[in-house]
Amino acid sequence: MATIGQPLTSPETGWKRYDNTNANFKYIGTWTHDTGSFYNSTRSWTSSNDSKLVLKFRGTSIRILSYMNQDRGDASITIDGVGYTYSGYSLAAGTGGTYQGLVYENTSLSESEHTVVIQKKSGSFLDIDAFDFSESSELLAPPRVIGEQLTAPEAGWKRYDNKDSNIKFTGTWNSYANVGYSSGELTGANVVGNKIEFSFKGTMIRIIDEGFTNRSSVISITIDGVTETYSAYRSSSQNQTLVYEKTGLSNKFHTVTIELKEASKWIGLDAIDIDATGELREPYNKFLISSNSSIYSLSEENGKNVLINVSSASENNFIKHGFIATSINFIGFFKDKSFVSQTNIEIGAGRVFKQSINTEPIPIKNMSIE
Image 1 (cartoon, rainbow, N blue to C red):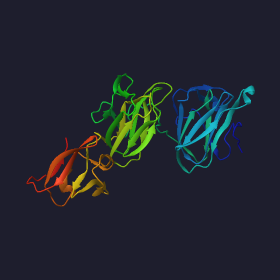
Image 2 (tube, rainbow, N blue to C red; image 1 turned 180 degrees about the vertical axis):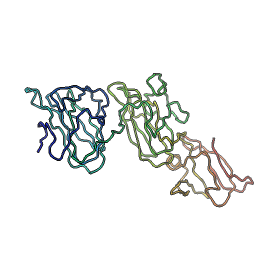
Image 3 (tube, helix red, strand yellow; image 1 turned 90 degrees about the vertical axis):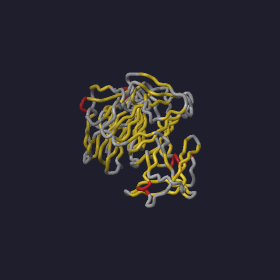
Image 4 (spheres, rainbow, N blue to C red; image 1 turned 90 degrees about the horizontal axis):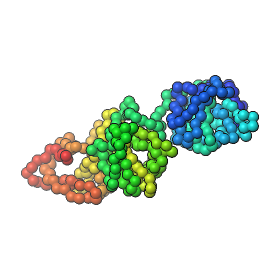
């Protein structure tokens, strides 16, 4: 039975080995690929904490083989979002280090697809020599990962530039020109509280920025009232960096707010990628319906329009519950036609159109906001 820290020059029974040069291993950042007394005579190594290795496989078990020495430190390994740490350190430096050393093992994974990300944490170098997987495992094409350069939207995605008129920038922002940016220009700011706001229809979203040392590592992003953080920090500059991704959303309109929270740091926007069939919209083109002193929103569920009662026409309810549309067809939503008159009031930071039922002799079948 193999032991962590000891050489494993060939896979044990029930395991199979893939060399570091396999095309399904994605090396991100600065890596050197050289030869020596390694498995298949090849290895890959990096001295950069920004560099990553990404792979995807279907199976229950994984082992990592590396060259080990006293100048090797810790590495982080994330499997399906769960983080672990392993060490490439070895006391065997006096004998030239440990070749094909077993540095990590996980044999308790479910029989399913797993995404693995490995990144240097400490020490001078991180080495990758080979991977062992359970015999029945299958190596798959690797996914895109945070921190990777993404110079064009992938298949199934489309890109909106930072200058799109549907994106609202609050506060003081500046434009920066660089041929390496998505359309030659990036919008950036370094004032805490500055915001980027927009809405989009679709199931997934990616944020593209320049990764750099001046970027914040705790940028706030709120989607439909749920707040997360992401980092755009890198120890060296990289244009068109994928800094945030969210998938698996419901196929409907979503409201997004991005905000700088960290003092003396920068936030930037180069581009936004969403579903190829999606749509970007201004942030507050939202509707609530007022009728008989009650406030309602609309939702589509299983192909049917559903009327949803909300507590009040507050700014928060407009943001969280309001539905987005260029127009509302009342005939399509209600059996009976009504007569409505239009006034508008100011609520919070947005201009809100309040509709009230009355008997004015002007039938309105469709209402639009330009």
